[in-house]
Length: 189
Image (spheres, rainbow, N blue to C red):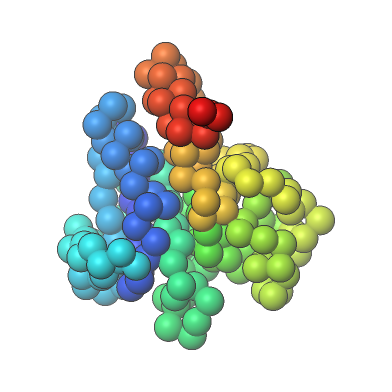
């Protein structure tokens, strides 16, 4: 069973990690859990209140296959929790690390993106940080995976889900059907 933890913060972008957690849990039997600073409830940008299973400080890296950092406005402020050491340690343990929207900023700050292809909301979003991966930035509207690290702009929750599942070695008919269902929305009438 894949063990996944998604990091949420106050005002997190609730649509960004919903598909990977729902699909992983419902279709592939993931153990999905959520962590917040000090384990306190948080409210999403859409007003959804989430009570997490654990505190970020208590994430057991030895029992983890996938660490997801959900985006949200906090990652561009001084109120953001400093999880750079956690992200770096997870990456060094060969855990899949995934960041979407401003969650990619945490990956950049931890040094994980210094030598990997990656994306974000924009190159400018990451260039404001002191990170060494600017030459590897991909200006694309979909998720990018490289060496067990998955990144995506906040507008790409479907490809984010797909890249994570493929990085986990999951690419079956269920995933193809699910992607076709979501892609149908973008077909011309």
